[in-house]
Amino acid sequence: MTDKLHIKWLYAPKETQDGTRILVDRLLPHGRDQRDLDIDLWCQQVAPSSGLKRQLAQGELDWKNFARYYRDELYQQPDKTDELIHALQTGPVTLLTAEREPEQSPLPVLKELLELWIKNGVPEKPFS
Image 1 (cartoon, helix red, strand yellow):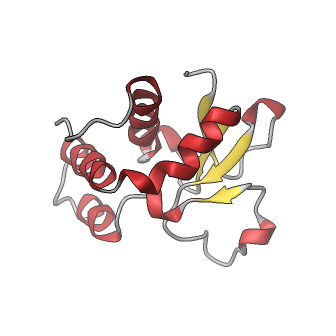
Image 2: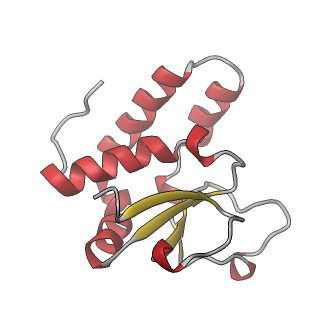
């Protein structure tokens, strides 16, 4: 599955192996219009909630707890990932973020969860 699902900075050059390019940020980058971005889908509903991102930014949550709460958010509403799961079933997918360091963004948490769900199906309760 790891060869089908990638994470990348939104402004990194598009490559043929990217497949379907999906932006997973709650907001569009400042001053940008969705039509100006080289994306196929914008799945803002899959991004962490604003409150959760704020708690991380303000130091109220460490990364481990942020990741756990983000997984919990996704488990509580797994239908939010339907578009992502469908895209993965049809070919490669690249999850995009405007955060400069995608490996230090919520995308690795989402990638791990999607790979698990594709392999095993959506579990009934979150893991911690």
